[in-house]
Length: 352
Image 1 (cartoon, rainbow, N blue to C red):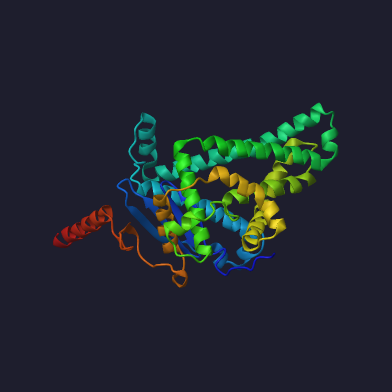
Image 2: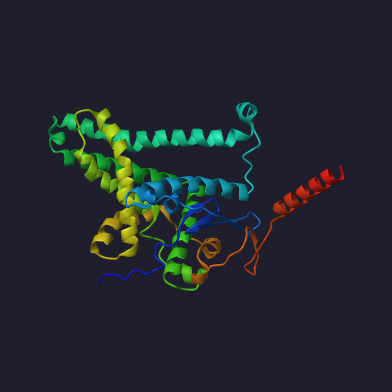
């Protein structure tokens, strides 16, 4: 039976961060983090998508690529903010090399380090998930006397299976790390909270706890959809030269991302046999990338959700700061100190 589209479905998305959750609805973004002292700290901001400012960026397929890039940038920003809100000191140099970097780049150090990390991460991702599967498939083709590449889809299927195996192995391996496992618990809290909202229930830990932690619009499902799409689309690429094939796959990525995004949108609004079959591998992977959260973690996710959703759906509009038991935010001590310091500085200049 076809599911009627709920007008609220698709209005909220989010991600797990360090000891917290980010929720986004439209332009409003709310980051909630559990502080070491047990309090919840909120950071509310607005992020207007390029899709709203440029019509061409909202065309089908194109909007998927735009959203993917924007989400990557937002994800890095939220991770950095969550670390800052936790009081993790990333500025104090500990080694001679770090001191040298600080002397050379000064305030731009973190930007440089983040840029280098992104380049290295991209290089590792391309090598591990794009180049290695191609070389392995080519090696199997060589051992089979070239019979595999005679049927392009078979070669692409072997390549895709290797890529999926590497992806699953990588995700499973990092899930063994305690910090990552805790982040996966917040990932589960994010999904349960969104499901609670989409079901029209009161946003409480008791209601959210009953919800599934497996969501069809999850980024994990999106990645798996792209992996499956790549098997089909890459079967049209040449096997004569692995480097040409590698370059062609890089050029094919925007198309795969765009189509994958459209499917995730469709799957999130429809429940039928087709969407359930295609979404099944991604939802299965969420058994690894999400864990059952505690009520305390659900409280954090729900705090972010309430501050992200529109007021007509039960959202609240408040500033950033420490969340009190009454559900309002007050500036934390650091913000108060900064305000006092600025005021004192202004007074001193006025007196001078």
